[in-house]
Amino acid sequence: MIKKTAVACFASFIACASFADEYLTFFMAGQSNMDGYGYVSDLPKALNGQQDVMIFHGNGVFDNQSGGGEGVWDLLSPGHGTGFSSNGKDNTLSNRFGSELSFAQRIQALYPNKKIAIIKYAVGGTGLAPNTGYSNWYPNFNEGKGLNQYDFALRTITNAYAHHDINNDGNPDTLKPMGIIWMQGEADAHASPESADSYLNNLTALMNLFRAALRVDDLPVVIGKITDSELGEEDIMPYISRVHLAQQLFVGKDTCAFYMTNSDSYTYGDDPWHYTSKSFIEMGNDFANAYHTLAKQCSVEGK
Image (cartoon, rainbow, N blue to C red):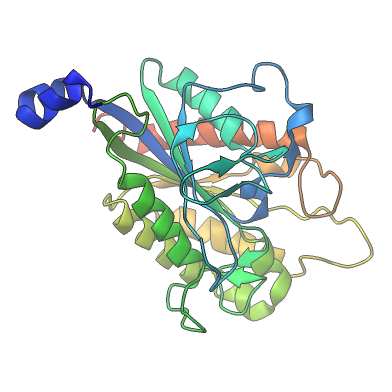
């Protein structure tokens, strides 16, 4: 049954506007350290429960696979780390989490009395350059069906914005794009000199395409600095200095970009690629604080 408020929205634009909720919306994307390898069992009580924040988590798949970008809006809770999946009707939570939990909590503290929404798409082992990692984000990818991480990220955004009542309260909602939070680069630092040397051009093109998809040309972008654990016998990121330089150059020439470098202090967990639960919590706080600083610089808060 349609609620009376929804009927009023159909009958009158003024009534519709009066009931509409505006959500400050953040797009969080990247590879495995954005996906999240923290253990839900390690979460402190303050983060181990449902938050009054909405999330649309696009189903992550490798290139040319089916189901990429499918999802459904839900209240944010633990389980949106690696192993999460969605068929577009139901979300299946995992026993892992990423930076989204502490990011949401900190953003709520920084923007009190504002409604917050997160759109997330992340797949581990993915690079920006073609033929890098298990899959890639290269916009001009045309192998097989021609569907890659860029396409699935766009599908995630499109599917998220297709819902006009994200909390199912019978009233229309407005999603206001606020920023892009990006954590990626390990695959390009691992693969080859060519992938690392092309990182600046690839990152610039991809961020501008995401800004276009979200229809804000100067949308703030926070880039998370990748790090090398230097664990094990193999040098897993021999070209990391080139990716670091590319990230620095991107931020240096873009007045609405910020380089979040607190990751230098993060610790590693079960393997040489992924951070500990504690570090994923720190990452969310660091991303939120970096965004808040950047938003003032870009005058987003006044828009």
